[in-house]
Amino acid sequence: MALLLYGGGYYAPDNRSQAKNIVKMIDLDYKETRLNGCHYTYDTTSCMDKTIVDTSTCEVDEVNVTMVWAQVVPDRFFGRELACMNQKVCTNVFTGEKFGSPLCCRRIDIKYKQMEAELFNLIPVVSSFVPRQEGKPFGAVEHLLSYVGEVKIGQSYIEPPERFKGDIARVYLYMDDRYGLSLSAAQRKMYEQWHKMDAVDTRECTMAKTITKIQKYPNRWIEAGCPK
Picture 1 (cartoon, one colour):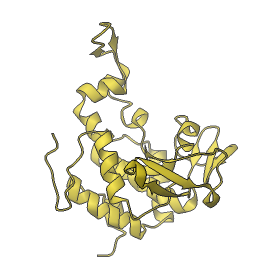
Picture 2 (picture 1 turned 135 degrees about the horizontal axis):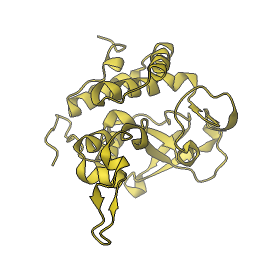
Picture 3 (picture 1 turned 180 degrees about the vertical axis):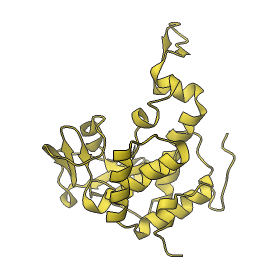
Picture 4 (picture 1 turned 180 degrees about the horizontal axis):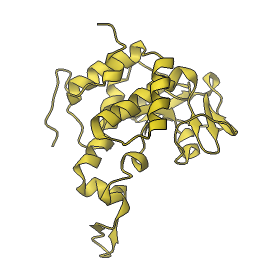
């Protein structure tokens, strides 16, 4: 059970589902996806479980796209060194077979569950972006395949628009601070450059203050750019 509660009434999340519900509530004043630049509204008839994306505000090929909460640092990256992802350390209760996977990590690894429930690591994106991502890391796109809104999808990398590069960088740098992502020297250099290139904005500051109250761990990369 989550133990932390702050004045606004939000418990620190125990899992990704709880984290999505919390970040949805503290993000209500903002209606633009953080990578694609698409505007969205919540469908109040569905208790805000569904969203409506205004496709006139961004270029997406698909129809009936929605907004979804996605991980900036995906589990395949933050869990890549964990035994539960790489070794068969869990047992299927029905077949008796051994396996390793995100499901296994979710069952047995405390650090994985903390990373999966990390509020700083969740951002709103259009649903059509998720399958296009295909496990590609962020980086400079040289061989462009397509766009999803303002995001470049390349053969090897995904490149955010300039105005969101700092947002992405500050999540990666925070996750490295808190959980030890073992970023390569090249990755860290790129994210530090993105951090300097795209300054912290008002939304980041407001969200960061609320998230810090809930989780009791600040994102120093955002805090440094907020008004004192």
